[in-house]
Image 1 (cartoon, one colour):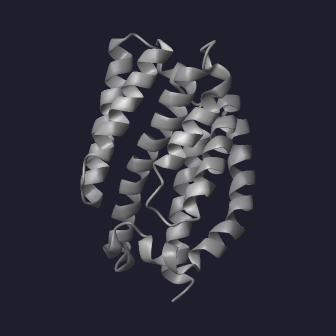
Image 2 (cartoon, rainbow, N blue to C red; image 1 turned 120 degrees about the vertical axis):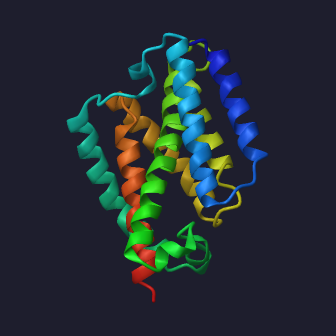
Length: 202
């Protein structure tokens, strides 16, 4: 797909999302709708989905990176989970704190959101721009910066953290030729962080 087309589609998606106010589960449905729309556009354009990170890639390498980075992230999550700004913000759906059933439903929904997030930033944007002569060498910086901007409004420390996390996710995904490593890391990290918020600082 032409890099300019990737940028135009991505810009349209971001602008639409910025102008929509919705509750948690409405956001989940929106993410699912945008994910479906992006996949539809790629398929109608006869693009190979693996060229946008939708493949297993080098799964062994991906798992190794995921485990290594998760271990590094645990102390950071422990620290952040004790901060009031994070405790007041997460879980995104407050009833997830009440029952096991609610927590499971919530994390399934989070999984959908994470899949969309990783596909949009690391798949569609990063992989979509990486082969461009003009934008290729900046592709990871571009997606990381946009990813960081989308975190404005969340707890303060999460904004700069999201840039570095997004950049590292991008490096790993490009090396493994798949968005699977960043999805695993992002989703697993979210589940564990929510558990820390709920149980560690009662």
